[in-house]
Amino acid sequence: MAEVLRIMGGLNVVGSSAWVEPAMAAPQQGVAPGSTQASALRALEVELRGLTTLRAAVAGDLGQAVAKAVDLILEARGRVIVTGIGKSGHIGRKLAATFASTGTASMFIHPTEASHGDLGMVTRDDIVFALSWSGETVELRDIVHYAGRYRIPLLAMTAAPSSALARAATVALVMPKTDEACPHNLAPTTSTLMQLALGDAIAIALLERRGFTPSHFRQFHPGGKLGAALLKVSSVMRAGDRIPIVLPGADMKDVLMTMSSGRLGCALIVEADRLQGIITDGDLRRHIDNDLLRRQPREIMTPAPRSVHPDMLASAALDLMNGGSRPISVLPVLDGDQIVGILHMHDLVAAGLS
Image 1 (cartoon, one colour):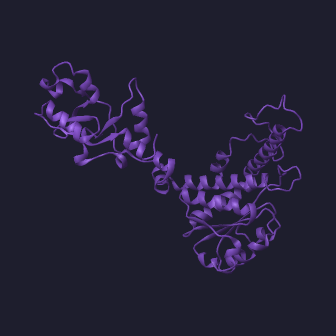
Image 2: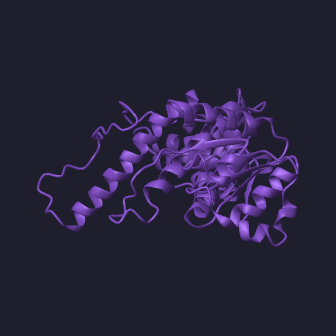
Image 3: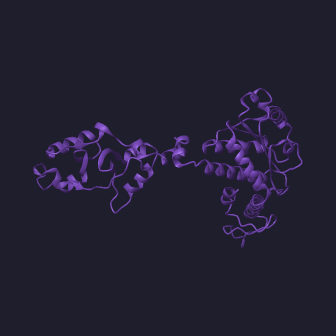
């Protein structure tokens, strides 16, 4: 319960019916009554009041039910099967996706499809998590009965403690009653926001109890900006014969040929697998009038250049490239003092970082 309260801790709660003006609420002074802006502000205030009420409930009896639900999920050998219809179904789909991406195996099953064969997807090792604000959704009847028949644990999220769903549940997460943001108190708005918030809080509590780390997160998010942000340097760097290395005894012609063939705009001066320095095309330009070809590579190289470790996040490597008084486009990759790769800005851009 402490994890859930911390997650929802941004809301200042005095009591279950208390309303505390949010610190970040938009000022209403000067807002024309009846305007679109006034309508939007009123809707947000109603929804914030719902979240405030929800946090107060989690600090009380609802929090005890949340703790039981989290324990039940952690003890399960199977998946969390989320189900619901209408707006609760849309929230359920999102929660199943959040559970799955944060270490809790989960999937969404539409209750109508469940009644037409998809119940076969639910095993005795699973947990059914049903969402229904009224707790009397007819479409949930078959999957609820199925869970009871095969002794599959049932979690219920509902605002009706005496409903059929709540009575059938192994653990009932009874939500506090609240006004909808809809001026007619009809369209599910505040209620669905509260379902989403409590479901997210449960997902984060599970994440923390499991010791879920960024490394685990990366396994489930290989694509898009999230995946790119979680890549390690070792996944993007160039290694082996793709490292533009110049060995001891080489002259500037060797350096130029290595830089030309490597197409990275640099050459690494390496001795016994240890990086001595780097020569970039900028170094060449600075020494072009100083009889460049007669110079020794060590005379024009930059010793002890900025470098990265293969386990560093690629996003951190990008920050290092862009930091400092002079942004750079290439970084040697060192494990201890041994050269193991090279990282170019183009590699990071190709991986989705920018």
